[in-house]
Image 1 (cartoon, rainbow, N blue to C red):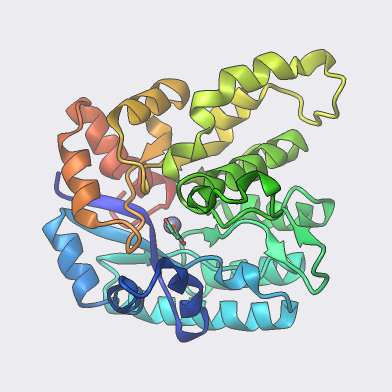
Image 2: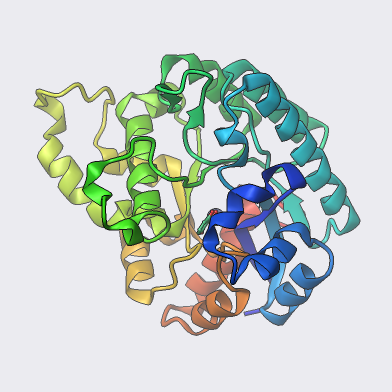
Length: 325
Ligand code: GRE
Ligand code: ZN
């Protein structure tokens, strides 16, 4: 399919490049090059895979791992300015989403407003919880101090991509099983719980127009909605579930998911059946995944041509209000 849009694709600046290094020395020279490059190999690979537009974002965990709030804000501004300059060179092929210094809710709000109003960005992508100067405390965004931030996101009417990072607590569960750490499992474990925390604190009752995006086909959640709601027994729960409605109803009204790094047709079809084709969008997760793997799979996946068009292009064009939508 020509004209695809991809939404979870990363670049790095010198200050954040090191965060992507742990993949090992055998891939680092190529990965490093791919993270820093914008106008050359990236565009050629997009062309070869029928991807017209990339909504680009900073690598992970980047800003979220900078404990000092002022430094986080400074690096975020620098990264966003660099992204804006690259997008400006090819506005027909690139769009930007903001990196945000979530350590400080007010600074994050200010930077988001700057990015949307001055840099022309289309939303934000945040790499999970944020580190703070207190090593024993991390910040998830269901905390009360983030409500003004969420109000701003809602009133700017832009989507917020909740991107993974490794878990906030080091669990003995994974000791001696390090292969589970990262994109195999723990990214999804951390990110799915973070999304459920947002739902469970009633965020979407207060801000019903908020739109959150999860990658990796929803970090496992579409497959789990029925069981969560059935066992949460939400109306008379003994637990403190702070939202008015079942989890699934928020997932179908306030969430979108992408195919980033998850190229399975049965999983895609399950997600479409669970949350509706309008809420599913194609993505690659470049440079951690290959354009060719994503596109070869998606272009031939056994779905209708009408669904392929929506997932591959039109849903994203509308949600991100891309030119020509
Ligand atoms: C990502 O940012 O999407 C990512 C990583 C590390 C491994 C895989 C992956 O940061 O998708
Ligand atoms: Zn990613």
